[in-house]
Structures are given as C-alpha cells and as structure tokens.
Length: 419
Image (cartoon, rainbow, N blue to C red; front, side, top):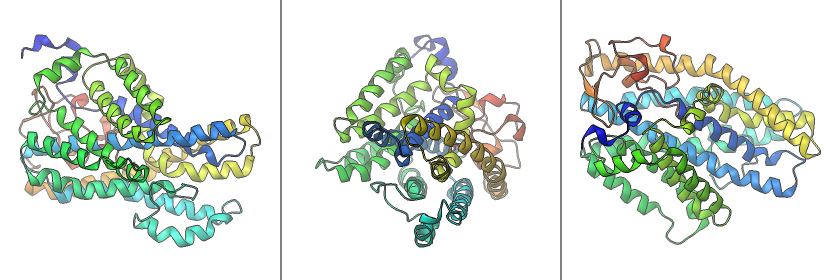
C-alpha cells in the first residue's frame, strides 16, 4: 500500500505512539462520571435523577478498563519489539510502585476519617475491612458500593490483570497474529452466553481490558491489515461518537449492552490514534489533561471527601446536591494533586530507578540504545531508557533524561495505571 492512500494528518500521527493527552482527557471524563455515579449517597436528589446517576457508573469504570488494557499492552509490545523480550520482574516492580503507595495512603486517609465525628459510623467497617483492603480482597463489583472503599474492587481486577496478562500473552506465543486470535477466543469465552446479569457484572471488567489489548495490537503495523488502515483513516472520529452514544443508551434498556459499550469505546480509542480531530482537541484541553494525570488519586479519594462534604452541608434539595458534587470535585482534585506530587511521582521515580539498575546488565542500558520499530507505520525511532523502565505518561519533558536526540514528543510514556 502506498503512503498516498492515507491522509497526511493520519500519516503523521500513525508513525509513533508517543504521549497522547487525549487519553488523559478521556480518563478525566470517566473519573467525573464515576463521581456522579457515587452521588447517590447525596441526599436531596429526586428519585429519577438518583437512578440515572447510579447507572452512569458502569460506563466510567468500563472506559478505565479499556484504557488500561490498551496502554499496558502498548508498552509491553514496544519493549518486546525493541529488546526481543519482556523483563517480567521489572514490569511487576513498575506496576507495584505505581499502584500500591497511593492506594495505601488512601486507606490511611480513610482510617483517619473514621476517627472524626463524621466518620464515626464507618469505624466498625474500617476495622473489619482494612486488612482485606490492603490485600486487594475487598467487595466485588456487584456490591452496592455504600461503604468507604468499596469502589476499590476495580483495583483488584487490575492487579490480577497485571499479574497474569504478561505471562499468558507474551510467553505462550511470539506470533502477533496468534496473539490476536487468542484474545478473540478469550472475548468469546467471556461472553455471558446464558444472559445472566450476574455473569455480565463479573466478566465485563476483563472484557474491557481484553478489548483494550486488541486495540493496542491493531495499532501495530505487523498485525493489522491495509484494508483496516484505509477504512479507519476515512472515518471521522466524530462519527464514532454515534455508536458510542447508541451503545450507552441501549444500556438503559438492557444491561448486557455494557459489553457493546466497551467495544465502541475501544473503536473510539483506535480512531483517536489514527488522525487529528475536533474530539481529540477537546480531550486534549489542559484542565482535562491535568485531572486525567491525577485521576488515580482522584478515584481513590473522592468518596471520603464526598461523605465529609455531605456531612457538613446536609443538602435538602437538588441545588444543594449539585453544590455538594461541585465542591467534592474541586476539593478532591486539590487533594489528588497533593498525593500526586508527594506520593505518586516520588514512588514512580523510585521504581524506575530500581528497574534501570536491574536493566543495566540484562538490556544494556549503559550503552546507547539501538533503533527499533515504534508505531504501526513502521517508522524508525528510539526508545529511551525511561520508557522501558517506567516513564509516566504525564511526566514533564524536563523530568526525563534523554539518551538520544529524539524529539520529546515522540517518546512513548508509561500508562497511568491503577484504575
């Protein structure tokens, strides 16, 4: 296929995976949807609005899972293409230093909350649940999420995914088409063939993760077809909002359609990586990107601040409830910014230094890296030391130690992880 079959803007974007602020923006929107979902604990809502807000939580978490599968798989594929192998222990080190510290800080904050008068009703729950929380053994996704940290069930799903996925996917076969076929079989196996709502709630999390993995593979030139490339390059990203919206609306009629919604989000992420668009520009809005970079801490902490503000304000009507949501958003954003600077970034850097030290011998990081293939158009570029060792997606250019003359914008960054 000649390069002329793809529009210039598509061609320019498809040669690298680099940092994608639009994904941070999408993560921020998903995080806000989860907050709206949990606003059912706020008194003052009319019954109809309460029902809608509870239902919307499905889509926020499902978007998280699709994003996580896509970003993690992209990183692993790039590392394998660059060095011919995946350093499994280093991957686990990076993941744990990314996820665990902020999570444990959140548990400590919830514990301090129970010592206050507002948190006193939850002290029994905290004493009985703190150990399961520490071990990622909290309540399941089908629970009512009325407790302090019930929403942490998604972290348990992510931890299982991080533990098993690299082993299953990258060590069973090295053939990328076979990997795609294995993923397709997994998705078919996860389908709730009996139509049970319980089965859907248990499987939808992994379904979204695997769909994200498929998107990451399709964006590699070695496994996607010229036909798929041509077709997607011609479809405006804005047009894909129609099936996304239709899938979301169908959830209100039949909850099994949540699986269809995850599929449309996966297609939407694929399209965002194919070309520039108005939607991509909107998602790259700086306030959204800022919040998306801190979305992990925001997700962890929003429930404690929601309960504090509800206890202080005690809203009695819709206006009061809306005020509580806005105040919770602002305060949680500020608190997540503090945790991001004080905990997330230092621990991420520590994990990166540990993996750099380990990689020094096995992957020859002490020498200038050779060129490797990045991106699905096959353009040659260079993966820097921090990329394989765990460079965060949201790291500022000044924070990186470059090992080549590659432009900063071309450097792939690590997935935000956790949620």
